[in-house]
Length: 403
Ligand SMILES: Cc1cc2nc3c(=O)[nH]c(=O)nc-3n(C[C@H](O)[C@H](O)[C@H](O)COP(=O)(O)O)c2cc1C
Image 1 (cartoon, rainbow, N blue to C red):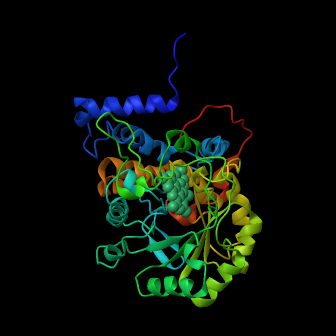
Image 2 (image 1 turned 45 degrees about the vertical axis):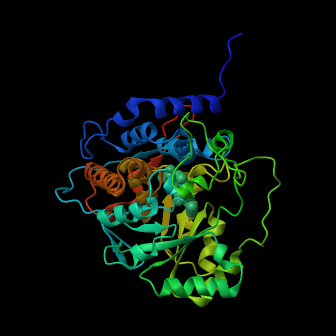
Image 3 (image 1 turned 30 degrees about the vertical axis):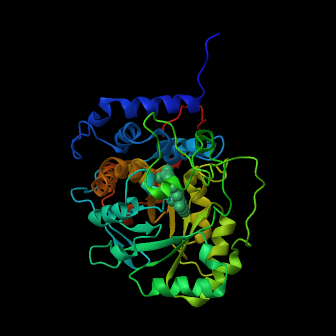
């Protein structure tokens, strides 16, 4: 009987082949602006897939459990079609917008993403520098305070937390005071990752999450993963729980009471939670399913967006992220009423391939796609984008998968 290698074995063999191969040094990296090779963000994905360790790539690429929401974050854009209008003047197109009283050159911003060192050394700082190059809004996972205090930092940045700093009033105050002394716009509080989800590609790969803090996936000269006795690989079958109570709406109220920094709640998917966010004094919300990496079967974020925009009713701006890869995706979200659109994997592809310049180039590609798609839809300014620009249609998900 022919032995069929397991996925893990295949990855190991592939990694060993790459490490041993003289081709490794020769994977061609085109000039960053070579549009024949890097015409869109998917081309960056393909290059990143070839360049980085497969275990790191899986960690970046994967979703939770069966990856149903991961697929739907992309597929749902096909349910929404554009209704272009013509014979309007589109000789100059302006994609700048306003968020909470601050001008953004583009509505596309950098989402928080942990584990960036798996894809590029000093990944957080490279990302921040890429955002600054593109003059884009940046949400920081932290650890780059020195750079963010410098004059080169992005003008508009937020500090992300899952509430680890909110266990005690003192810890919360300390966190807030340090941010108040910085140039930070506000706090991005991610509410959807209180528990460790099943990311089953990483579980099968035996990923030790702390590898991504260190710098790279450790392998020996045969391409075998190197682990040490203290490593804790990602596993299933452990009953979920945390040592401390997880944050609640009351926690957000306490945060609101002690700071005037802006508060962004990231990870909401329902009208009910948007209403709660308004009630507790959040300044903005992000409709997000964490890139489909937490709870599966949430549906896509573009489908959740209309009810969330309706619930916000203009009282707070609504942002969205999850599966945005094209100017048309962004345009559709803006038409539904989003103020800005976040990306993670696309800039991580740019980061993995070219560091800060790759991050900036991906942002630039999406910004220029958006401008072109606006122009071709007959809208020259963000304020011209109306709900009538889109229409939902009946559509089944049996259309194949495009990440
Ligand atoms: C590798 C990776 C790590 C992430 N880490 C975080 C995180 O630490 N905190 C968070 O709020 N969201 C995190 N996210 C989710 C993103 O902020 C964002 O919500 C989502 O990925 C956007 O979808 P996209 O990747 O399809 O563009 C992560 C996403 C990826 C791909």
